[in-house]
Each structure stands twice: as C-alpha cells, then as structure tokens.
Length: 143
Image 1 (cartoon, one colour):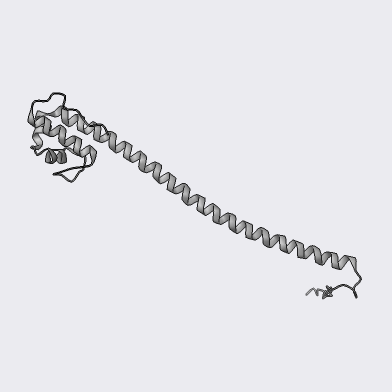
Image 2 (image 1 turned 45 degrees about the vertical axis):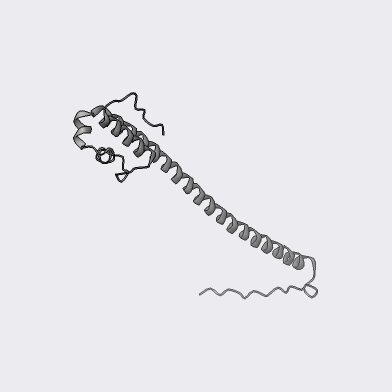
C-alpha cells in the first residue's frame, strides 16, 4: 500500500501519527499489536488517544478510511481464496466420481460382452453342442 506522505508537516505529533499509520498499513508495527483501530494507532504513535480524537481528527478519519479500504480488500481476497479452494475441492470430488463411473462402464462392457457370447452360443448351436446348457425352468405353482 502507498505510504501517507508527511507533506511538510512540522508538528512532531502529526509526524509521529503519520509514521505510525504507515507502519500499521505496512504490517510492521513497533509498539502495538498491529490491529487497525484508533487505539492501536495511538499506541503505535506513542501519543494519547485524545490527540487523535480531538486534536487530529483529520488524521483519525484518514486512518479509519484507509483501514476500511484495507479490510474490504482483504475480505474480498479471502472470499476469492475460499471460492478457489471450494472449486479445487469440487474438482477432486468430480474426478473421483468420474473414476467410479469409468469402473462401472468397464464392468458393464464386460458383462454385455459375456452376455452376447452366451446368447450367440445358445442361438447358433443345438443343445448338445453348446457349451452353455439351458437349465429347465420349474413350473410356478399358484397357491
């Protein structure tokens, strides 16, 4: 992210606040935990919080605006990353499903081939010459 320029700031408090903002946005805090809120900015700048809320409200507003932009950008990156991971998971599931279908297809092709061979053996030869014997069916008795 672009750093916020000092623009000939003479006030040491404003310079400290702008420097702290740049460190927080860069992700290199020195005094605070690095969260992007006004309290952590005050800790990072080593100033009292009221300096930000009352004396330098323009810097507080600038910080909050930039922090919101950063959070929005980070959130959209997380969503797109989550969507990508979801697509990769779905792709693996579909590949596994295709492998199952291909195995079934191979089984069905083998079964059809065997059935066609049996059908040819039964229809082309007489009962004595056929390798496949037809089992007589038992009559069904009705109760």
